[in-house]
Length: 169
Image 1 (cartoon, one colour):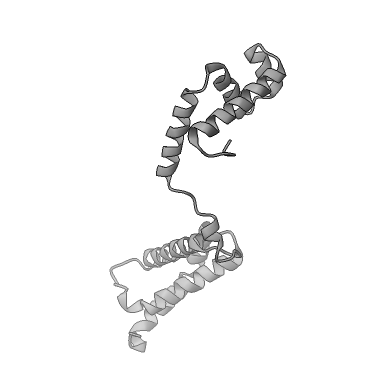
Image 2 (image 1 turned 90 degrees about the vertical axis):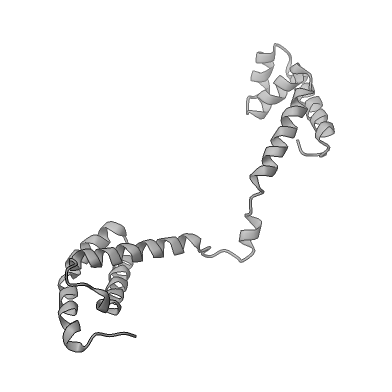
């Protein structure tokens, strides 16, 4: 590890120590947890001490330290977002989402299949699929509840036949 001679490093070390209250205030803005704040300050100081040889005297030390702290915080945040804490290794495989292209193809198949269903049955099916109750659907379609149930059942069967996936609806 590259280190400054003890005499050259001492002014930077002392100046870093003088900036601890400012680092604490800045860390408080980045994280609420006291333990996370302490860890962030400690990591910032460690990185600053390790990189003291890169500090340029014409640079403001506080700005340099704040940049180190912000970068440290962002790096840790991104790392935590990638972690799957407490979940099994197979969770990622189980939680995988199918490609949007396949959904677009299926949506197109469904639209064309819906277009081939009689208008009354299509309207009844779509109302029920949107969460409208059978009673309200019957009222909107000016028919009995039994008729609504029959139309929905027939429309589902027609869609299954059109798309070729039994039990899909």
